[in-house]
Image (cartoon, rainbow, N blue to C red; front, side):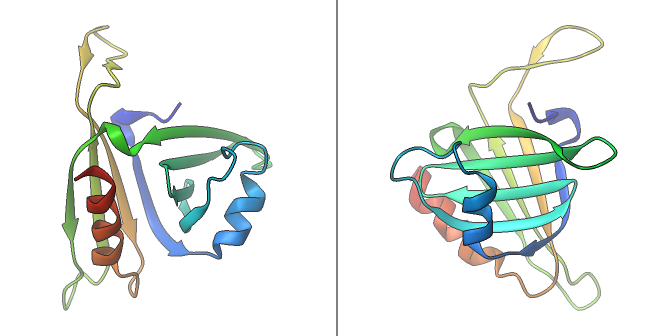
Length: 137
């Protein structure tokens, strides 16, 4: 499961949705299709027509992968920061409710859980935001 205490994916660059479909073979629902796919650090973020999938690459060889499936119905809010003159990368922040996050130190359930996606220059974060809005509104 993704660690919501540090759920930041950075240097996300667009990849062919077909390669993400291949990577997620056997994990997608019947009829589910990949709309957007990005690869960066620490792994992949895939937007399907039904949910958001995060893939965190683990281990020394990178063959171990942690897949987290986040339904759009749990998205409570999102924020977009477009690139500027000096800070050219764009950011999409997503807040998820109803998931519950247990603090590792106190054991207290807190929320909402957040995921921050930082994209390389040239990615139209507004298009992705419009896609998210269409799924949650």
